[in-house]
Length: 150
Image (tube, rainbow, N blue to C red):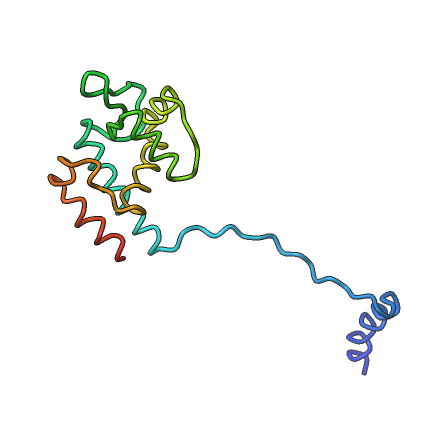
């Protein structure tokens, strides 16, 4: 009986302080950020491998670097060797952003920005043909098809 009283007493006290029409809110829990699943991480790693191999094929290396990379007597820029016009066009198609020529050159030189755009062009749009020599050499079209099927 004593245990029953100690179990019921807090409930009765709570009922006294919560009037009709009032409800107690359960404590809010903090949202736990969810990372990618194991499968999503695997797919992203495969995409990164393709981007790295494309950058190496196009410009000789991949990843962020302080040295500016140009090819074709200054026509092509960055690790993925974009012309300013192509970068401007692709960026506008991707999200509507309109860049100046200078902004396009700077973005093409920024590995992270250029890799994100290149990933979109290759994996979302299926347009590996923008890099014809490296597409054939690396078999990009087949690799993209395989990764997109995962």
